[in-house]
Length: 556
Image 1 (cartoon, one colour):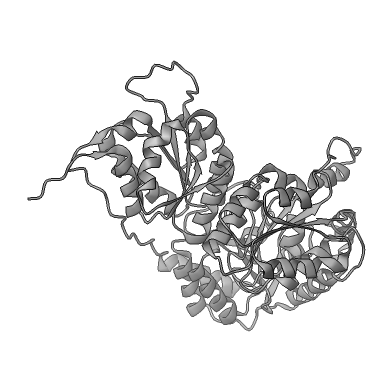
Image 2 (image 1 turned 90 degrees about the vertical axis):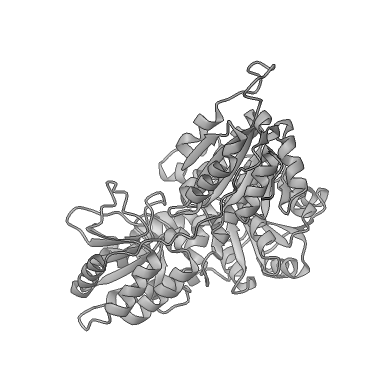
């Protein structure tokens, strides 16, 4: 029998991460992480050093979103760990598998009093699926396996482990076992619930399919295409469900970027049944349910979280792809289904979305910005949106051709996530065209990561939609009848700012320059920042005035 030598806690931790298939750790180490840092240095795992822990968390969460595997972020104790809080909420609400590792002072004996000491485990408890302090090196593999299991199983989310300095340097027993990840299969929905769903679909006259964030998986995409094709039922998406089915499909009606009152809501109001695939109530409501109104079938990995505007009458709980495949194979077309009104809505939506896409107005109109980005991006190109007014314009106007080609956050909706998310995508897919689309406000919240992007030699275009203000809040301020106050600011010269980091800066000075500038930047490779001024006066015309005139909503 071969005897094994004792192993240092940090080495054990990293070996267990390798066993889980971890490729990258994103973060900012501190002195409490030095043992762990040395263990990473001699491992197969690549450390991605960022300039702020929040950006590291956003990158790790996006890695999880795109791969389905756990993304890993690292911080030291105290302020380093608190800087991960927003990213924890981003991953938890957005259902992105992420493991956060934070350091801590020695817990068995410390001579530093309470300097930088916070109860990070307790802090992370409401933001995670699992949070633990490791107090014995022998327990590292078990705690890590449990954390990764919970992070990646449906519904995915954030988990946290605190590795104190003395536990990282402690020797674990020689026979400490590293666990192999299990290959658990998700349960399948009962045939009875599936048959009842089929019966409801066949009984309805105007059924409609809604695609939400939980459906943004490859297997589910194929199943949903089969369902739409086999039944002929039209579909719409939530913001985070964009691209699950190619939005050029003749049955695609639009995106519910607003909660009510938009063109697509004319179709939703007309429907007597909505087959709700993969919706999560953490996402901004795509429509409101009312007692006595349309019926809703909830198709998801887990039961519905009921709230005042979402209380489905029937639930199909189990693996979504299997459920949708069953419905596609068994429901079939119904002669009495009437989709004529839905097709009229589609025609109106398509006409509306073509408006002003070629406008030469300057500063550039949002419609032209969205259209030009779509023109230059290839079918498999990925756009990562920060949070601001432009996110609504892109959700409504930009057609996604495949799942996870539009990365936006409609759960926490945090500013500052656009650039790090795009960087993670550019790391994973170096041969694809990637574009971060940020407002000037959101960009500046993590703009220091330009240095990280340049250092990593990524191929990435960053489009800054510039209005020198917190534009969405200004729009809301006007909607509510308040005076214009407190939301305007100044910006750096973004071209020179990009160049100071070693990136290439571009300033768009006419509408006609936008598409050629973006196309050249995408083709050139490297880091390019494109500054385009936007005219947001269209917000009021389109969202406050034009939508109120929709015939289907008059008198409602």
